[in-house]
Image (tube, rainbow, N blue to C red; front, side, top):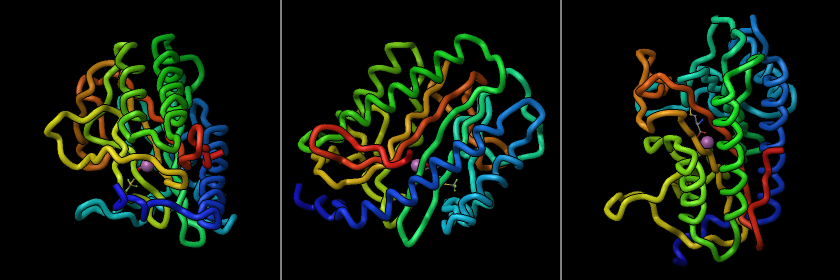
Length: 260
Ligand code: MF3
Ligand code: CO
């Protein structure tokens, strides 16, 4: 599949992405450390945005267009049954919530993208387990991102592990290539596409390809719906969802995480 070799980044380009991805990781860590009862998600968004800009980056989601809509915030912040694309808002977090913080950064023309789910105080054991398994599935997927493997090795590993725990693997949203743009080819599904599902080429992985791998895993059904705000993706059954994302580089033996 020589046609996909254009996705391979040079070490100089990867070094640029490492800078952007490092800002992503730091911004998420900063906002995550603020997560507590009484804090609202606009405050988290503002702190993350300020940090990114102060460090020479641009918040990549701000101004990003999806169809006819333009996203207005630096971060997507999604609580409880919100899977992804939640809008920062003035509702205070409360003990027992979980909150996913998803941030993209552009610096010097190169992109990084990452997400992490945090607990607000004590949460039910089943929710803690959902977060742990989702996090583990991401790391297992990253471990598959090695020279000579195939994209679906990542997808299958995440799907099998999460479904073995009885969780729902979201189909409507997927990971993606990343580099000079926030979203590049190929799509990186967290499931093995069906035989007749188009748009998901199972490419052979080469060292230097860069992906955002991002399992979105639901405690209950895999089905999702869009909220009235036209952005927030919610679980169809109202049960919680976890989301972790790393920007990675394909290497000889396993993926290298840039978002740290
Ligand atoms: N969080 C998405 C991703 O990881 C992108 C968000 S696009 C936005 O790929 F418009 F919602 F910001
Ligand atoms: Co992403």
